[in-house]
Length: 103
Image (cartoon, rainbow, N blue to C red; front, top):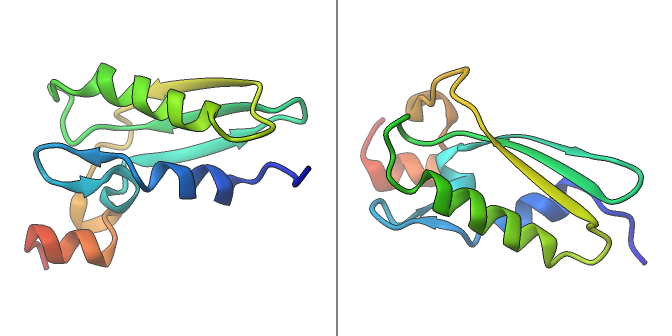
């Protein structure tokens, strides 16, 4: 069995899109941190485009479900954090910036 890596987690999360923006959470820069434990536990800190985003709990559930599908993952905890506040100019990928028109 391949060793669980942060890259594996990020790759899995690339498929989850913000339904309003139609851009992935990873490209938006909303995945802040991924921590792995030796026993297959995963802790993810993620943010939202705004604290009032109506999809917060849905995103948390989707992220948790997607990561649980990865072989070797035993447990997933997803923390919604707002520090630092999300800033698309600083955190979004070039692809997302193109889509959002924020150069």
